[in-house]
Image (tube, rainbow, N blue to C red; front, top):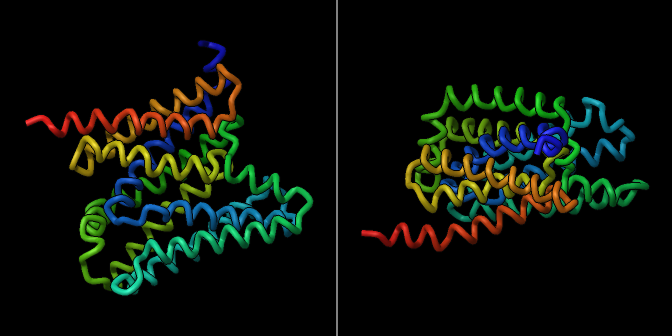
Length: 273
């Protein structure tokens, strides 16, 4: 066990922080019914990183995350603006269009680079196993900045999520929408290299969905989901270490199994008088 923690302490710490952050955003996303927004934003971040690769920007250069965040800010502005079309076009459709276009553009750019296919694979699957304490610190700092913003506007964000599909769309709503997407995007930018697109989507949606199975309150869903996310991530890391399996894929699979296991439990619990 001590050997496991020697190798997995940093990945476990990153999963702990990301589980808390993404579950919080996941509860909002479920309320707003924009399930694939993080997948779309993550793909925009991947497109920014791929652009850096094609421009021969060194992978460790600070320009790479800046490019990724620049693409995300563009996506945030686009999503917060096109929400005004929701009466005619569901926002999820717009989000899907952005995702598929960003993914295709990244593939086109990667096709011009010698190691483009490997680059795309790494962005999708991540490299959780190779998370360093420097990565953990970067995630923690970004998470602290995001937490400060959401602490200040917590009630505003919550009210907006609760009434997202029915409230009039005003300029203040558009600004808060942009801040919401931008802060989610910041978390994605600092974690996409280690977690990958697939694990980011899993951490955002599955814990929040599991929390919704057992609680109707925002805080209850967040606490249940975050606790479940942390426990499942550690389980996935342990299984990956013990059986020498791909870490990201193992964690995602564990989340799927946990979700399926909780379904009958939630049905039995909700069926009680």
